[in-house]
Picture 1 (tube, rainbow, N blue to C red):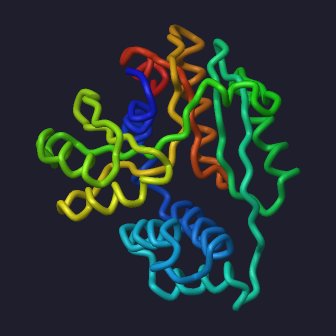
Picture 2: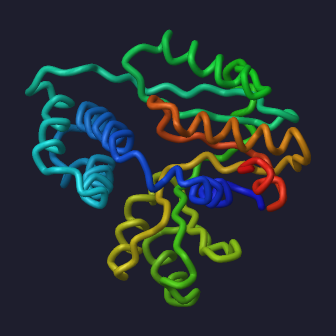
Length: 249
């Protein structure tokens, strides 16, 4: 088990994705507000906003909620102002961790993240302490049951994607961040709804964890993923299936 797609699999096993619609809506509302503030409230002119709106609709968020969040972002309605930030950390066994957050209070968020990391055998790191171990890439996960390799590869390359990788039960579609939205739209035009689609921080190499460190790492990632201010968390750890099962026990 290795890589970002595997962490998605772990979350699925733990039931974290079925979940907590309230938390999902809260995250999407923040995303809508920040995207609209950054590049305007017209999705035709704002690819990032267009992607978040599609995510909101996929989660059955009411249209009024979407409109209000966008209007807060453009300043047409009052509301909380969110800031984007990225924090780096070391997990158990020295695994690298990057946390992408949206928060209305950086001091509170940093304190809470430091507490979670310490509780699970990790610690916050200085800026750029681990970021150099990752590459920023467009990242889309398509179950093999939804697409044939040749068909998907042709569409991905035509849309400006870089690569299609075989990852057990899934295809991993990689692109530059700039090409991500075009590639995602091309995949969806095939009638495919990806299991994951984001601008991701992909590790260049993986660190094998075993035993206590591996189990602690899974619990840490789960705790971070559940934090309301975190929208993405990435790591470079690689563990065996048995370690995942032990962490769930």
